[in-house]
Image (cartoon, rainbow over all chains, first blue to last red; front, side, top):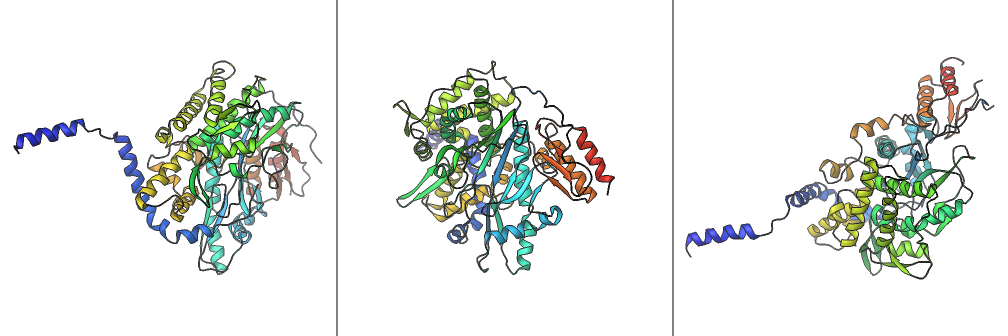
Length: 59
Length: 470
């Protein structure tokens, strides 16, 4: 396949592909960064941790 | 003896209102290897430093707010009187930090008692066994003879408000888990009554104005969720205030009376498509989205009329409009940095994608608790705010200041000044929402009946007396 074709196809593909709005991509990245940070501690005995939070009702 | 030279009530504009928020925090000791410790014991250790300086676990702070242990060993913080929503948000956020600041000392006390663990404080509304506790909103309203009708007319608004201001939650049922708008909705049992724990109403009618009872009444709304994101609190209190302004101006409310309010609040809570229909008193049906659209429309027609257009009012109706549109379209992204239920939904959805798990996975429940944890390290909201994933309404400096200082323009200013001076003097004193007194002194009790009055010669005399008569 001629090299020129491939280049121009790739260019066209890039141009026509709907790129996600940068803000949304940045949001997902920031969210993932945060989840990366907390993931370890959230996974430790999650079920037991949650179950142990019991209090009487209030108002 | 109560001082009799009480100044006449100030004349205030109809649009001026006193707001307050009372938050009961969930208290959780994570100590898997320790002996069983009751929540009462944990609360006792948590409040040890408070009792040290305040000689009680029920105190008023220099910012004019009240801190105490409520029914069920819930630490509770009631904001001082705010006459603007931004002051209210600053005080509310300050409260999260004030209770969190007790944690280190509480953990130390627990260690001395042989219990090694971490105390978590959650600004949420249910524990893992389904017990509920509240976030109560207080709106000072002008006294009127038809309070019952006035309150009833607000119920369809309060039933449906959750589609924009709900905290969002995963509801776990024997047949699976789904996402709902409001954790509090399932714990409401009637429209209006004077009960709180026995049978929780949406509006509590206990007549405690903490103000001149000839002029004022307190509208005590207990149906709302505790809200984490500042814009959610802005909308929760702001939209309610705008509706109240019109109701107080005797504008007829949209006639949307619901046939079965308790059924309706649950139906609306459990369908985040906003399409669940509920029955009206006239036999027709309506959705939560349509109810909120009707109230928003009602408010919009009075902006530039009865409602003065301010930046804050514009921000409230803009977020309200976008929140309803998000529910209607099913695309939550337009409010996913502002409204609690949408912020949490995005967080849960992303975490589920990463873990490849169902919504009923315990790690999702663990994530939900972390969302409501008020710790800057263990909780998520401060981190999300720093990352620009949750918007804020008030500046950080204002929250820090509100931890020690009351709003300048209300009665809280007088209470805060008195508490500060009394603490500095080392004298014993007694304070509540309407009284200031130096214990065992010749000076008289000062009765502060006007929540709008921020200057009072009697308080000046009392503060002087703190330094003088011993």
